[in-house]
Length: 297
Image 1 (cartoon, rainbow, N blue to C red):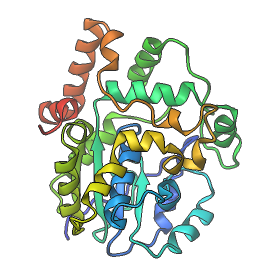
Image 2: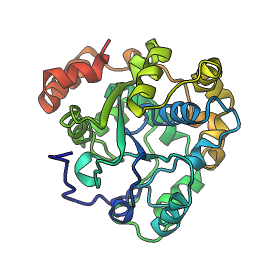
Image 3: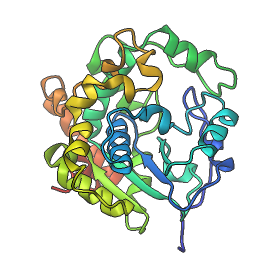
């Protein structure tokens, strides 16, 4: 495959250590799941696990599919664990393309979601995190950049600060979406939209399986759908969430929250909505902005 993206930078923060990809050894059937964050990453990990293992409720998906560029545990430990895996590997990243080591051996699935829905989910994630979460991110040796602090109690204020500082206090949003959109035509890249998964999960799962060249056994299809459903994941969140949800006092179900879109509609003013949609078109172009808002359907 020619004209592959080239890594041009590293990203470091309270969450990121992108240098792990420099030492990662790709296999011919690796799967890389990418999103900005809170755009359906855990859902996609669950779907792919069920496709690979034929509908199995006992899978510890969070352990099987690590977030590679999260800076804990240290990359030396993580790389050894991933190298020891004997099943087809499916790994998670939140990096833009130019901070990854991109390989023609792997297949990449990027999930998009409207930023307004992302932030309402991200706020829940951030606001309910406990001290263990802050200590893990801020006190683990090797931090580059500022610590992450507690969020405001006003979600509109949180939204406006995130917009004004492009992803604060996490990481830039627009470059993340834009970088994956720009390589959408590569044969080993597939873009999926959160809204399309919500509207027609069976059809989208079949598309995913075809892209990953996973043959679906009809005998297991009902179980694959059952264990990939949001309702099942919510009820069994401890299997899908890192450390079983220990970073939230209310447990793993906080991480897998509502799985719905449009909660921002009761909070953002018409002027804020217009401002966001204009910014999306400016940053992404009309076609990508429309896809990010509505999906392919």
